[in-house]
Image (cartoon, rainbow, N blue to C red; front, side, top):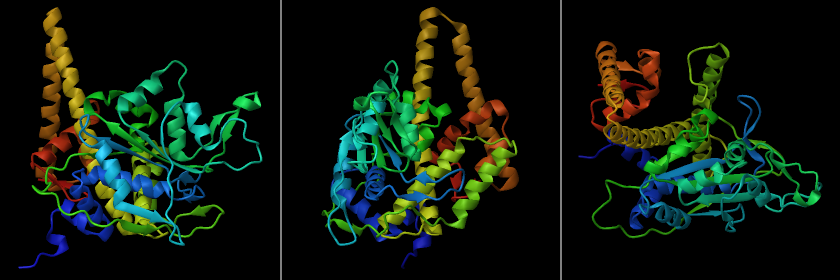
Length: 412
């Protein structure tokens, strides 16, 4: 009996939805790399292949760059390098005339160095940027943390601006050290290897919106076949032809409405997380990457829908990191409590578990009562002091198959 696409599991439906996605998974498995992490690098390479004049239109505020950040999550040696290598060979990007597009792949240094990657110090003011596109790679997240924690370091603030395509650099008095990079004159993709136990500096910068700008994708593949399949030929993607002037991607109404509603809620003082806007922007950038990967110039509803599947995978992966960090914190607290015979630490640990049980109970009761509920419904059903751990509990309940998520709402 034949099986239609809509009857397949959600993950299988995602990978089977387009030939290029099926190819990425097949190629990743032939090279023994994680399909999700390989896709994260492919999307970064797709975006880095497009000149910076192509932008997201001004939905909220001004226009925004397509620049995209991918975090490849796994233990040291688990597969970041394999994912990058597989992605490099899996998809070949060519220009409108069929000529291969070269990508400058560079390590990340200081905040000042990011601007100088495109516009070296001393470049004349009326000269164009010697380089317009780059793919930055950081092997381990603790390297990023070390660079960002140096005294006087500007790396993390510059990365946040880099993501948006804003002006970078510093207007020093001396021409030899002056390097001001105009807004939307550069294209950047960033790929960072993230070990969950070392991810605290990245995730704890949430007040600045740094982790919300990343797409978190795991490097493992629990469903990998026993024998690696044959390696397919590279998938050739012809980058669409755009002009040299500023070009805005056409965005589907579904994405515009979602982002506008969130912004309107903030303006009206509703109880929403302002930083969730970065998560929706990250989803829109992924949708744009899928559009480019499909050789098109117009982002459609299917791009937005598929980007939502990637966003949910990212949320689950990030939630798993938060669980690891939370467990490490609990272990440290236990050790400190035992060493100091501090009963208060143990009581706090018990209280934390009780809070998680309260959240689980509230979710189950809400779904039993309503049948289905969105994340917003479940969050509003919790007391304010419990809401920051909702995603961790949702991820745990999904992993244990206690609840399911159909892309819009949760149900038992």
